[in-house]
Length: 114
Image (cartoon, rainbow, N blue to C red; front, side):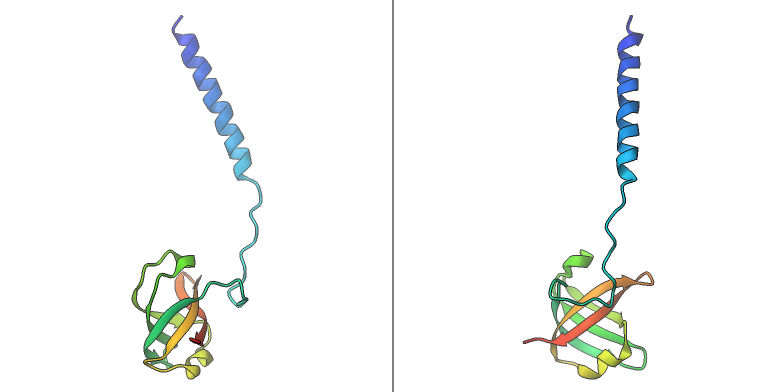
């Protein structure tokens, strides 16, 4: 009978899929909050191109943003707090951290490069 090997393969596939589904329900570790900037937070090097404090936007020419899988480019970002923009100006070399907040890449930390 040629049907038997097919049924055996189908049963094995169903069992493997059931096992995989139960594994996928395992709880995942919680993500760090956007406000947590610690020594383990990856900072990206960049240069400030412009600052619009009124709109809460900074344009940065930056290297690869590893935690966002974003290649090097020049891009405008919203900031988590407008107050951080008072510390920077066009031409400044900075280190910064970006996270997705409200479905948009947002600078959550920025500091002058050392």
